[in-house]
Image (cartoon, rainbow, N blue to C red; front, top):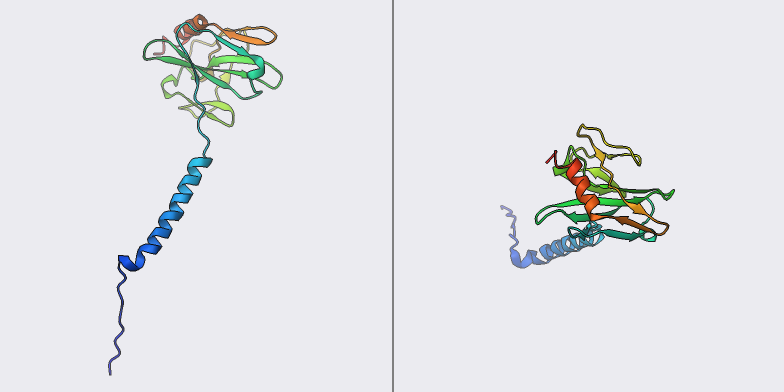
Length: 168
């Protein structure tokens, strides 16, 4: 006598609960990742000629606040304002001159070069950048009172034209 083993082929009618379970688990996981992933902070837009007036109480220590200044119909200059823990204020362009087209990104409250993936150097107040194109934040002149910070639109335009126009 021969014993024959019957192999039953499973069709979609038998397997749909398994596929539905996998799809539900995958959907819940994808939704969880989407909800828990922090959204990138978008810069606050300023139109051409508009001045930035900012209360110093709105600045969190060691957390740069991003802005975008409209230079023309299709171009803008991204810059940031940051207050250090010892209340020192920095206003500078977010991208360096060497890697300007690569942009920048934020990581752990710091602004890094989009091409080099390194922290950009910051100049001290009154210090001018060198003629070479390096990964250095270019400062923007600003006026500070006891409670308010003002960055004039023309200062942004002039600094951009002086330090970035030769690069572009």
